[in-house]
Image (tube, one colour):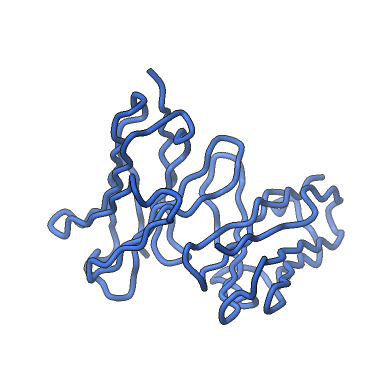
Length: 107
Length: 114
């Protein structure tokens, strides 16, 4: 099983600042099949990025994904109030599919 | 736009079987473009992939749960279901049904308690 380790656990930032979230895999993620999700309290995860760098429909270009192999990054260039949430990375290239433990972005 | 909705008992006794149903609207569960999955999240914790089924009927289960999990499809009702046997308190979680990466239900909290 591929273990995904996200860092940092919590990111304390202010609106307008840049957020950089990391996801490291215990082995190479096949075909860069890595996604990023945002989750707010009481809600289902929302797909932001898939295939490591492709934005899902409706996701603003302030959010970008990069990386390959074992190291992936989600960058939010200018934080807006709606961005404060928990973010999960998810690999879907190798079964069983796995998720990272999450990074909380807080004010 | 595909929509998914979980339903089922919110309380299950230890050692019994948890059963949930996901009703799909806005698309056919027989579509070859989709897979049908279950994912869970214990309160205050992260996400765990349970398993998925393809339209062909083939399934894949997380090895950590494989001995207790069954996912099946009812094409006549456009639904798919999850059964998890011999539950314990560790199975208390919000259970999500999902399709592909994009479509998720709102989630159903299932508590295992006597």
